[in-house]
Length: 115
Length: 143
Image (tube, rainbow over all chains, first blue to last red; front, side, top):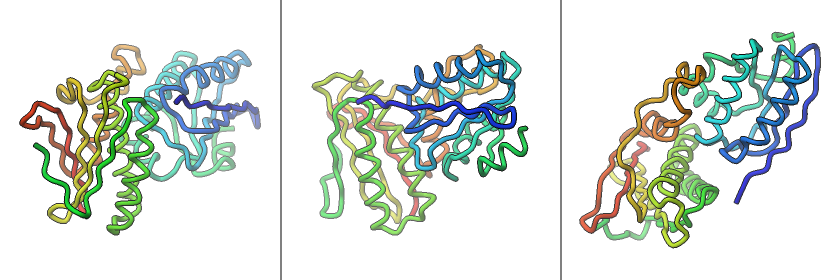
């Protein structure tokens, strides 16, 4: 039973949006890494991770996300997050993800503030 | 021995395969709704049930196909008590809290988030063994 993510890349107002469909678990690692490498190869300086509002994100998925954060730090990229539920906003704050990535309430809000 | 099941108690047996924790999460959500737990605490309950079940599958049972993970839920002392039991080595103890700065700087491996979340979100957590040697983690969320 493995999760499969479809991740669409779109650039708007100098921000590369990684639109992540599906749950985020340890099985998401190759999908997130491939999408990040594609975004990075485009020379982007700003990345917005957009999640499904009802996505299930577990500890394995958090570990994968933090590995993406580590790559953005190495590459001096700004990273934002949007689309997550209030529960996962709390979880991301608890584990410290918000020290590296700002969470925005909406896509429009993120684009306005990150652009 | 674990306490005998009462009429209102729930017990679920899961395969030791990551992904099946969703079955326990859905059951915990239904049970908590019936008991009137606040919606934000239901989300906390789902997360701790999922993380304890994943730990039991991966670390307790080593994902052995012949080993099961048992999730039982009951109401005790005005709280929902969830017990997750494996048939392997079980929790050997909680890992230290993950340090995200060290993980991002690749000084630490990205591990320990599951047990960290259990400790943060549950009102009470206990790890123990039954008399016949099975390991379990028992988590409580107040109603």
